[in-house]
Length: 369
Image 1 (tube, rainbow, N blue to C red):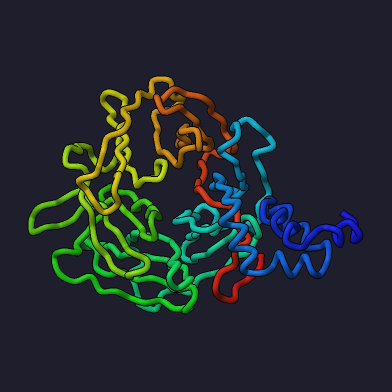
Image 2: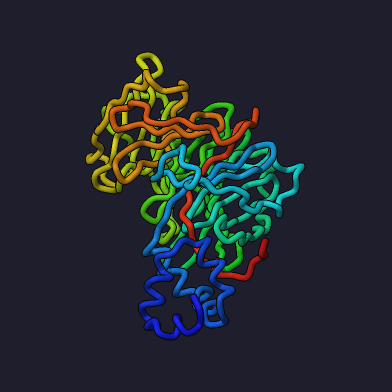
């Protein structure tokens, strides 16, 4: 578009057109002129673009090489146009690739834990920031419930970790890092009410699920000598910890269960390994355990692997899950296989996350990849 044509286009109309373009195009258009560079770099423009476009994608990171793939799961998995590669992870040291874990995703940013370092990274822009170490002297051998989310009331991002004592295997403290304050804060977990442990033996706890401005984990709650299956919740705005009950009729080992967002609801999936079915439950009214409803019982006889871990669902209701290795599986809401495609040839597998393309910056100074 030449300068004369741009001058004839009303400014407000030009902004509305730009707000509906993909991030990759907008980054290129920063070079068009100083005014476009200023507009596209503006915080208000980035926030409006995120709200209007809201383009979710699946991110794959090869475990041994950190090779990346970004997939538009609303398109066919076999559509080359929907797959983009060469996202920049050059800020990571090659010797640390095998220690890399994805611990959360929020508003375009991925929380990477590459022991012992933690990073926030925007795959769309390449922006990254290393998070300083916590000053609270946590044990190097402890396990953590990790999570990452956004507090809209303060325009702040929080990295959350709840320590599981390596001796007692019970939670002992919760700490979070505020991006806006650029500081760690600690919340002591006292009394019997907040005594939680990892339900999956010999494995690190799964990253927390971000939903409704809160982070959610499946855990065991210790009540006297009893163990209860619960969902532990950290409210990002209230900075408070509480828990919610699972469905009353729910009778599954937490080893074969997980949390995800199905449609617009907090959801729970559970695999029955004996009869090869998957139950899907949704909480129709948030924070109301009585509203749990079993919506699907799926048979996965046609699946390419026995592994099941759903990531998301498409607008049409198809379910996207990982194959437990290097690819994605798409099935319909009856459990019938639609597509299966691998994106890496890596014997060590891949790390996977859902993220949303975004121009948004963090509320602090950072490093640029």
